[in-house]
Image 1 (cartoon, rainbow, N blue to C red):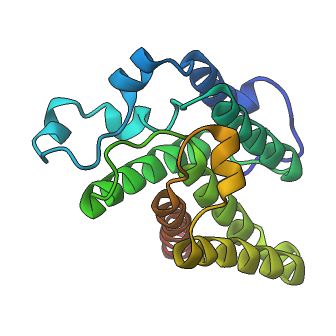
Image 2 (image 1 turned 180 degrees about the horizontal axis):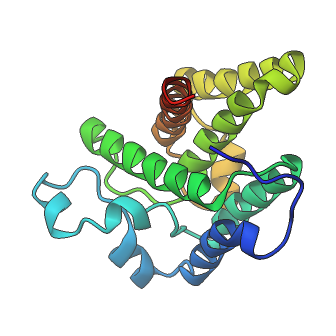
Image 3 (image 1 turned 120 degrees about the vertical axis):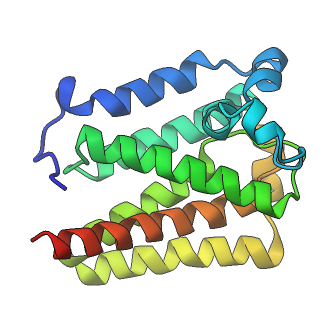
Length: 198
């Protein structure tokens, strides 16, 4: 899929700006959380009654601190990678990752509710590192090992208590692991399809 070459104008970042607007629109209030959060341990029938939660759980946050941490991470990622994804590629990734994480959390069923963008962020970060790996293999390899190391560390030892205190909610480490898996799968599928049709 094509990437944008050093462009920062409005249209070429439209899907990115829409995502930021949606995150900001879903202000962290209890009403918004009740309507939009993902409920992974609900009866599976709930999945068909309220399917929007599979996507909206990722754009609503528990507090302003939670929202700002995820939003700043996303914006920083955008500026680190000067060559960004096309609107189509970015949108497909966000939807795929959200659904993959949501369904994964549903299967695991260890959370009563899930909100936040950090799972998708972890997936997007890994995907971009893999996507641009050939540009600078040493640097990107180190970054990939760091991302995977962080996720493995969280699985073994749990999340950072300081971060949980700051964002005023428990960190859903399973969403980070699922997010990384979604980034890897999306990259692999894209590689297979590009090789097949090239």
